[in-house]
Length: 73
Image 1 (cartoon, rainbow, N blue to C red):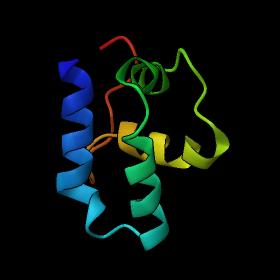
Image 2 (cartoon, one colour; image 1 turned 180 degrees about the horizontal axis):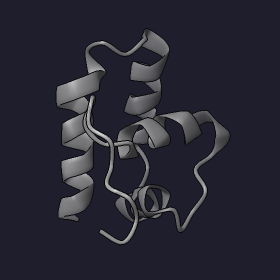
Image 3 (tube, rainbow, N blue to C red; image 1 turned 45 degrees about the vertical axis):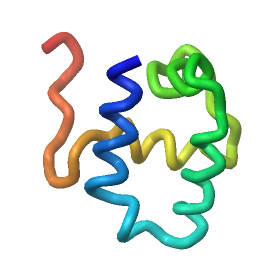
Image 4 (cartoon, rainbow, N blue to C red; image 1 turned 30 degrees about the vertical axis):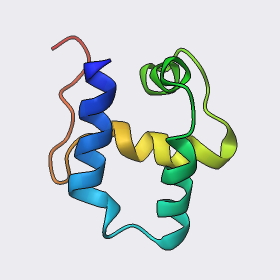
């Protein structure tokens, strides 16, 4: 699942070091989740548990300082 790898790598490169200790810990726990479930969280086909919801949103938000293009582009 290349897309999943890219999302997680981008988060690590751009946000992990500046994240709070609690967010870093949540990310470590999120990585224990099976890839197919993570894929569902990030594509929106599965709702993430409340403890991961904000983190999943942050990871899928896109690179810092750049908005995602509107849907359909």
